[in-house]
Length: 280
Image (cartoon, rainbow, N blue to C red; front, side, top):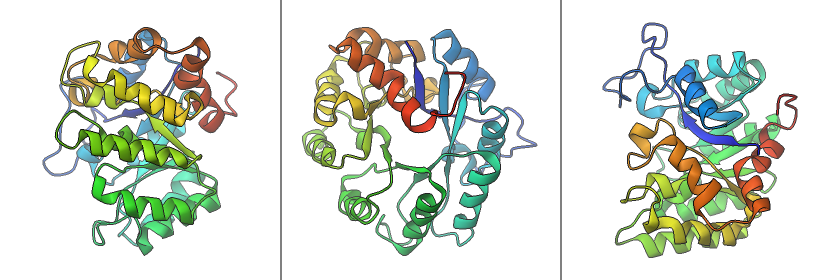
């Protein structure tokens, strides 16, 4: 079965060539590099990954992400992150796409406007349309839902990946947030990353506290619009479960039909980001 990891954060061990930002959020020693990700993912039977710019380590300096993407196009698809309020960002995005083969922008709200519905964000989404790339929607707060909806309505031709399904986790706002995620399924070009079962769980494998929510999301969006992601490095982002256990949730634990597993684990991602790959 084809397996593609749609959300893995990478950091280089070479901090002279790729200096981190001030006070970076560091992964454990020897964890986080593309080489380590390749080892872990290959051991789990994963064929390709979408590498994510690690803002918590590099800020908006995408050099490592772009270099890793450019020289590993047979198994890596890059997702950059840029500050929408930096006037250089639209030009950088064009360069990353044309020079480095980056295929997606992870879009954050404007820090100044505190909204997705801002001229600076629109400028980046316009580049995404022009360059034929997709948007990873970093919608992590309920208060940002309204502005994200306005933007998706304004850019109906784009394809969107829904990062972490708004960071669903058990707690006082869980019901409200889950309802918002399910309501967003009406956008037929929005693909849900159902990795919150690992990032949000408060229990060890098999994460029983979020299994039902994961299945509700899969049923609302349809397996044809859901994606598996590891959220690597798991030592940081899924501390209750390992990379392999996160994958086992979708290969063994959740009550999915065989065709649904194939779509969620790899076929959907291949159709969007790896159509031209002769290696998959």
